[in-house]
Image 1 (spheres, rainbow, N blue to C red):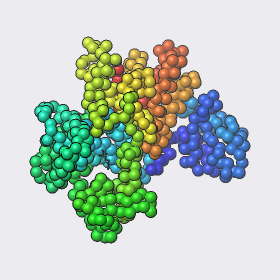
Image 2: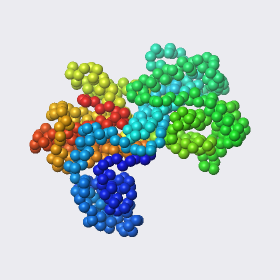
Image 3: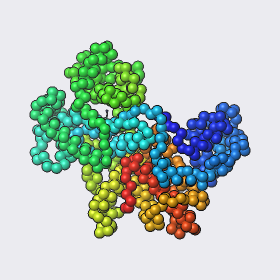
Image 4: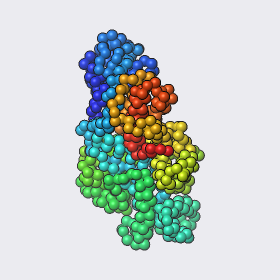
Length: 580
Ligand code: ARG
């Protein structure tokens, strides 16, 4: 994707440096970063990038530039420190630009990109007939945040999902329900109950392995799969009914999480046509037949053999994914095709993308598997096969009641009950969404409810709390803040400068996060911003400021922090309550 240089201040500095060094402006822009030690300046540029071109050491270059460069619009002075060119910025000038824009909202409505590809993000593709558990939330939260990041930065994005409503897991569940279950179907929460049927079915099949039942079970499962495939028979009817239970559960969770998909694809819907597609390409001579089965040899690409049709004529998971991709390209003319799926499926997607390429789909090179690692409980891994999971609905209930107990019940009587409920929902969703996005996708997440709810840790509720505190500060001192002109030049403290610079960097951090599909990057930014606000607030009294002018400027600065926190949280799909 191509980001435009949108940030007036950075751009201004980059232009200046580029004129003086004849180095590409965009390159400079991207490499302007805060120095490790704040005492050294506000922004630094590593001169390594110039060494080759100028045939000098980075330190020499930094020295020469520092002595040559002069004060300009936003830079007070330049100094060399080793290989770095450090800059002391004119905070009041920057404040005027950035802070006023945040207050008017102009800051948030800038186009950040140009010539972006039309993208689809497929995420949250749970299997029906299994229970949704906390692990599924990682995919959901990551995918939803990415959709929001891309939209905000100016991309056209289509969100899609692809639930797995056919396959052996379904057969196992229906088998148990029909042959072994003695319980009555509950009148509510059928989706969760169905998930338990799957787990029981799976366990029983494991148990009976090696016994005289094994052969009988295998036959029964084959019958079930055949009925589902043909679309008729008692198992097919049971499938239709039970599939809806799972769908109801998914929708309930999506509604709770405030997630919506533009397009629902289903595994069952691409099953038959995927088989036809493979046959068509086999006829064209692209695939090979081996003992009745059809597939493609990808050994030259070190991807082994990709089986596409079994000898009984049925397709596989990869078969469906090929047809799915074809549909996505055709339905939406997308240029970038992103799949948020856990890392176990890396090989699968490599095979699928390579096969698509060999089939002649241009878009194959722009298919991307965004992998992520698992969610574990403090005492180990989860598996719905074994049944040691935290069902999502239970978790949500538990979390909501914990939040009320810890933070909100004290307002009973003061707040309307509805407000308590809504806030508890927002905080629970905030804790989960922040917790799931906070960790880099390549790392494992250990889900620990108590940790995630702490308002003094790196958590969603912490950021929400800082936001709410600023709101109440504003209510107390001047609810009209921002409507009158502020004299920013009175902000002279170190903590104030740090805060202003951090606000200035919101979009650059967001760009880095979006380009690398790492929503965790924004989470760190929001956490750092909140911490900076807290140290500002501890050092620079707002209510008892040295003068009225300083008081209003500090309050307006706080208001800007709240605005950026609110926007940042919204990009993660998190709401920011005004009180908590
Ligand atoms: N339903 C699958 C699973 O639970 C994930 C589907 C991922 N998406 C895809 N296009 N293959 O493992």
